[in-house]
Length: 362
Ligand code: NAD
Image (cartoon, rainbow, N blue to C red; front, side, top):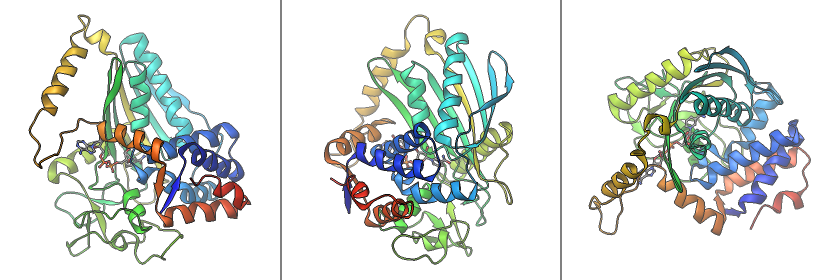
């Protein structure tokens, strides 16, 4: 296990992407967002992605230095093309447009197509919440067919994340943010590198057997650093929540994919994220100011449910991430040896010195 300092880890990742061909500002954003995913407990969307992002940049699957352009621009609706630019660049650009329009009109919808991997969607809901806005995000992952629908064994869905953020005056937002697969693909990736194991029923083999073995998704893979291609395995990740989760995933494909123009996932499609976002100004919906106090009362009521386990606790959406962030800022960010070795190998291959790489370690 390697323990790294969050700020120095973000700086190392930024150096990697500058060496790989991004400008300094884009490289800094990639470092910031990937590290933020680790801080919030979503290692699946954190720095474990560095080797894969560098490969994608080399292969032209994601492009440096791109910006969104508007295809439709009405006061309420914006449709944006992300031109396969880094999600850490085109994602925040799309969110800033949604924030500006919702502040003007009370309500805005932004459809983003052809975004490079957007990473942790919760970052975008947090951006909107910081401006006092509720936001809802339906996302799909075009060209990534990883998840079997309820009742099926064949892959037909992406891990299609869904996210809702709700601002609270003077407090961190309520934040629901998850993949509609039983686990995010990155959690299988982290497990394959010696990190936290996935649940034993998270994957499904072609014969319908449930499994927690990453090889069901990746096929045989080398121990330690090395590429894992989720398109190589014989099986699939299962959708969460039986028919209900599978149905939500289906709608993420329809809204995040088909409606945005990114396309629903399917074979022979170029990898990208599609994101349909809706922004609501609660001050316009609620001129009497009922919402903040009602939220606070309901949070307290919800959390007052007696825990299942003695000493347990009921958490509201977003609370787990907050706790993770404050712990890791204090104690450092733990990375499995496999994840750290893979980052160090990627950095070294780009000519970054050992002293610079090791400077991220606590
Ligand atoms: P997860 O299973 O950890 O669920 C996270 C959600 O559950 C959060 O809202 C969290 O506050 C809540 N939560 C966690 N523990 C809780 C508890 N004990 N009680 C109550 N609520 C609790 O998340 P995931 O499905 O592994 O997704 C991880 C990340 O992956 C997300 O940030 C998601 O946006 C991202 N993702 C991105 C893509 C993409 O293509 N860009 C695809 C899939 C997932």
